Length: 133
Image (cartoon, rainbow, N blue to C red; front, side, top):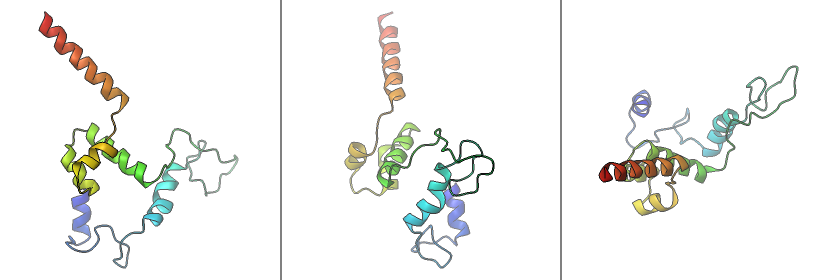
């Protein structure tokens, strides 16, 4: 829905980049990282301002509740894992990540979260218990 609204605002491009700069060129991944992602992650624990902003009355201290940036591969792996946790099927995740083979997506990108393992074992226990009774 959000992506569809963005496409409409951008004139519904079919061959041009979906995310473009003001002059129509593709967005630079490094600019996206430095201008949007890192400032969102590197916030002050006291005032919530970005790292490079003025911190009046205190020294900058990183908000440790925000995750560290671990690189684009980790970003993509986190996306795949979160989509999988939301119930998105593996083929759709493969297409979103633009992998040529779904096995690459399954083997290298989708991770099982600890709570997923616990929940799976609880469901199995419930099923076995109901079968025994």
